[in-house]
Length: 425
Image (cartoon, rainbow, N blue to C red; front, side, top):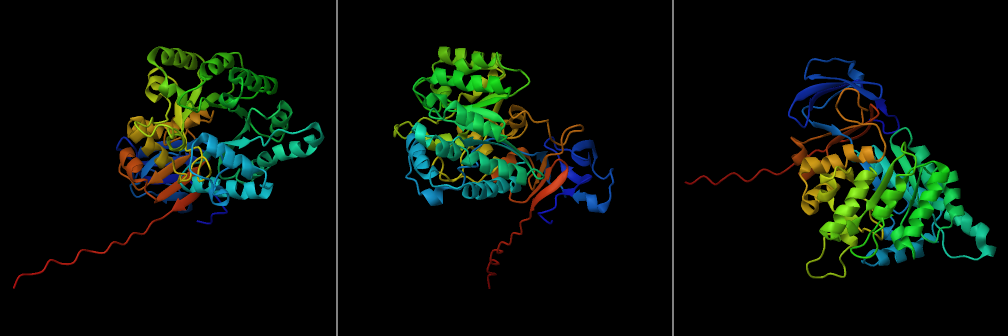
């Protein structure tokens, strides 16, 4: 396909659904209109793709990315280390970045996600504030906006291919005026990391007050440590007074995975009552957490099963990719799902739902998938089941965004045949 021109698709022929059915899927614009037994639907050839039995899934959504940081590891060459070391490396490098540098890396990272099947991304973007004097205020204010300027540009550039939602990641040193200035550029949600503040609960209240003034949703980094303060329950209770037609969520929530049963039950009850979405981030938190525990190293994940049992919407994302917070990562939802199975002890079907259907729900997006009436954001892979797809992450993929073909990867594999067995004389 010509990658510069998304092609409208009216029919996907011979698709395999996760329940084992072989079907044709008709698409009307951006919406799945009909699912019928294979071989029973027709459409013009130029608007038809024969999937040849490929598995057809809801396209993944990435609920927690950092496109402004992505792919910066080679330039920064950070030391391996925990969250504190990663923050220090990134902060030192951030002063050297330009809008163009950030945008180039972010665009590459976003298109890598799209090629792997992810059609919607929520990316945090740092409000690049630091300690400064009043005399430096104009220059520092402009510095604070660089990441947002870059990601708004990338979002606009890729609007015809994928949905990108932006969150203003306001650290404890970012004054309200900087957060407001970033939001004025068109950033969608308020974010932050209150657990890093001197007064974590006060920082939660500060960020929610900004969201209340702006009438927008919130997605906070919450309790990203194995010990220390718990802010998630305070956030959940406070968010109940905000507009209910907006999305409120929390990423990481690692501390939840180390709480005792009684305290855990209290926090989970507050989260469930507030309908707060929780986003677990296995690859980055498995990397960042536990450096101080060389024996019986904790897994660094939130309390996934306690949350699921309480009816909380638990999504999952990749978080950082090849930056100081995570030196690896493939920008592939199947990688995230596989880690959830191994480290989070969920089933492959649960894991894939967390990176697709539930991720879309937490992001406030319309339901998608091969079901009549749903948005035609779809991923077809050369796999026989969801478990097969999660296990093998097949590179052969066909990606539709709003009913348009936006990416296709075809793999040709050649394997040498074994030598013929010697024939005895």
